[in-house]
Image 1 (cartoon, helix red, strand yellow):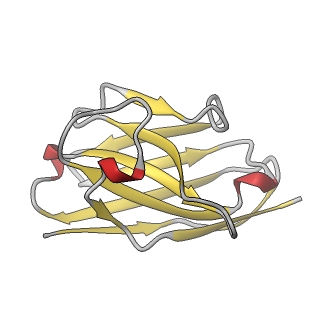
Image 2 (cartoon, helix red, strand yellow):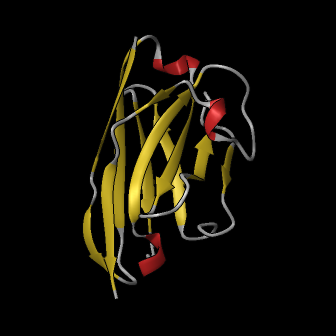
Image 3 (cartoon, rainbow, N blue to C red):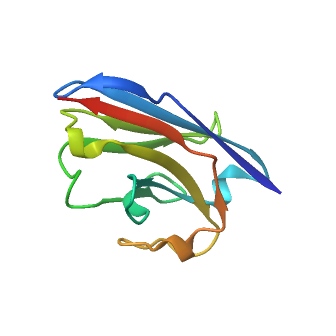
Length: 125
């Protein structure tokens, strides 16, 4: 069994920065491609960013490209989402997820087998 726990969410002003973390326990963290998704009230959960097992490949949604950075530390079983120049439309619950199969540049929710409980990010204007 794999458990994912997000942290680092909170309230931030537009233009500010925030760093989310997701720590994974259970089976070997290195076996999983990892991703971040988000879900705003009344909207579908959407892809934000993904990173390959080694950390060598990353991909981002167009809406966050150039502002957000995904990374991982395999020694700490943790992934991060550095969020810079945040906007009110970035307000959402952010979820991390683990994919044991193939790395995909534009993954869907169904690609990921394991999910965290989410952390709220609120951006004030």
